[in-house]
Image 1 (cartoon, rainbow, N blue to C red):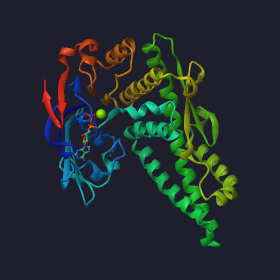
Image 2 (image 1 turned 120 degrees about the vertical axis):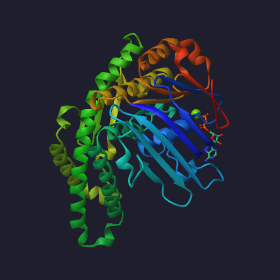
Image 3 (image 1 turned 30 degrees about the vertical axis):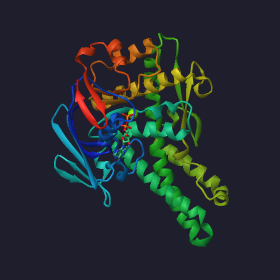
Image 4 (image 1 turned 90 degrees about the vertical axis):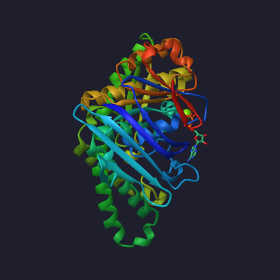
Length: 376
Ligand SMILES: Nc1ncnc2c1ncn2[C@@H]1O[C@H](COP(=O)(O)OP(=O)(O)O)[C@@H](O)[C@H]1O
Ligand SMILES: [Mg+2]
């Protein structure tokens, strides 16, 4: 899959610009706060359906403008596609695929596939579980519409169940009936989500390990360990969605009284996490900055590999500020792993690429200054 071009209008600090991308490495470079990440944010909208910075729609519209527009053209093996999003200050966004209006982001997600590395992802090793769940959810949602559907349904049911628990006194005798229905629905969605996450993580674990071992000359090995409310260390026993659902039902029933006191759902796949082990030890306790970055990157490379295996096409790599703080060996490894792929990468230092990129001459370089872009 290749991103051929992108057009921006009143998006963040980009008033109006169209880009044509090379099928290899594309480098956006320039000082801080010039608009490099804004470009990646705009492109990623079509892969993830929303801003990776968790921005509201209206915050992406250029200050003092009323609406914004981003469009991309991308090519798969079969055809060229055009997708477009329009944002309005006072109305919901509009989306189009090949000229046809799309009503829900879920219909969009999965057509244009990308792997994003954003500096926040460095927290994948040490930060809270939500960032690790969102890594898996972002990757799997692009590959499986049924996963995305189960996840969205889960979010809705969880919200309803928590609202019920918070205010159970008001429901009187109808509480138990409603509660049981919601618990059953929650367990059904959680069963599916957990089965898919378990399969994905077990596949990912081996590939991340290979990437990290390559990156470090076999000095570092990594292992991912999935932890859920229904099982502490989880492998194949979680691959069966129906069995998971049964176990979630048991768990939810056992926690009912406690949940009524606390007013919140205590078990379910919103509590999932996975532990990253580096050379057999919990990485979050021992990892250096550089090791964290390497693990996060290895996970991204592995994400791309699995996407290729499953969908038959390589996703587009969007790498924001990825090379800083890495030693030369790790930098070279990343760059060599990216060759043959389409990469859109941002950097503050032009020199990062001059010295280390194999075939730097072929890379397209775009200098960014105050929302303006010059192909160098
Ligand atoms: N809605 C907006 N309208 C206009 N400018 C914006 C908007 N949102 C962010 N900016 C500007 O974009 C710049 C940051 O762009 P960014 O792509 O994050 O920079 P960098 O080049 O460091 O990656 C800042 O100058 C900021 O003021
Ligand atoms: Mg940036």
